[in-house]
Amino acid sequence: MSSWSAGTIVVVEDDQHIADLVELYLREEGFRVIQAHDGQKGLDAVRDQAPRLVILDVGLPGTIDGLEVCRRLRAKDDLPVLMLTARDGEVDRVLGLELGADDYVTKPFSPRELVARVKAILRRVEGPPRDRPDIVLVGGVEVDPGRREARVDGVVVPLATREFDLLHFLADNAGLALSRQQLLDGVWGPDWYGDERTVDVHVRQLRKKLGDALPLATVWGVGYRLG
Ligand code: CA
Image 1: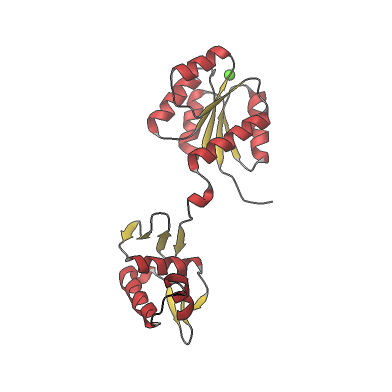
Image 2: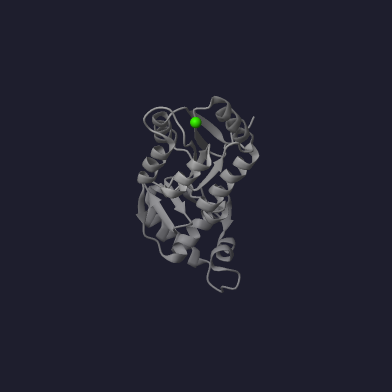
């Protein structure tokens, strides 16, 4: 059994049959599903579970209906919301109130279509994974290629362009001993005619700026290894 998860989705729906059906189909796609059966429990679940998306029925028992839940979620952040509506009248209200729901589905709906809508919303809102390069943690240094930042204890450490490129390349190849020539090729490019000591100079700068947080070892006779 894999521990991989596509993330958490909170399903706020008082109709147990529909909630179970939606959960079943989302689980098949690797999502972790948290059910909530009224508006307040839905808000609590969003607060506690850090979901990627909320599926929200308009008609909920109690004092907080789906429209109000959506309004409160929207007041806080950009968490994607997919509304479930029972009647055309509800669609009108969802659209008319401009609550900012990302999409809606009218009951009765096909669970497969619902899952397809969920994926489409996540793609649209979050962008494809390739657009968000992974942040790598090596030792005590966070390497964030998207923002071109190195952080130690959450604080940005200013690096020159080539210093960051070198750190990024080392982090991508963490655990491997890399020769100075490999580092020159990888960071400066194969057409760069420079002295291998250029690498040493930049390594010295990285060590100076990042200190003990940087687990960068000198491999005698070879070059350097990070992590
Ligand atoms: Ca309902």
